[in-house]
Length: 342
Image (cartoon, helix red, strand yellow):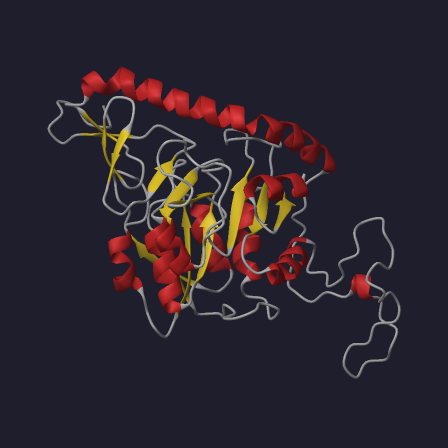
């Protein structure tokens, strides 16, 4: 299941966990590890996130001794308002950005990646609501950001491949998370995943934190693949420690069951069908409710400026999004003769 999910996304490694909430906890905890290549997150460091979202994006930041810095959302896309990023940045304390793709709508990846590159910040994508969503970026922009790998999910007819880089959400940042809770795009009954999209050196601390904090990488049921059983030495302590029972992190037991992975493997094969159905259902609702536009304001994909009946108009950035929708959001207009509470 882990190999198949990583292959679908096009990431270096996927690690299954028991929920999307646990995936967020493992992802942010991984970046606090002394094994992290680069800027390790330390207690008191700040992480920019969105004020509107599910609490398990914010909870792990606080649990890790870090400080969330909240930025507003754009009410039309549901995503973080990127115009407020600079105001939220603290040159002494800001070390990461952790935000979700809201209801299957990718956030403005071009702007956030540019911001993270400018200040050398980690980017954690909470992709729990957006499995199957695609972000399309002009190739010249992607080259500047060092993100030039194409995904097979390119939207036909928008651009030619030499002009655009198209990748699934959850693959643009350093590390990302998935949830397989029943209402999500696919399910394991319950479960989640941590995706290593950047440095493969994040794999070892992520596995350790998921698996009790254990330092050893021997799989269950396999003995001494590390070559360090009963021959390990820690500092000045006597030689002979069993590496399999050496713990290098404050970790958890967040593994899922094999039976959940078996369910997930079948679901993953059906994911393209699920994704297309979600798009079709969203379009059906949007078309059916269009006659009520005087009362409701409808969600737009990031970078879209208008809906034209069966397609969208796009802004001048050259970036577009293809949403694997998780929900259908609409806002009651202030001038409507009723409110959202009626």
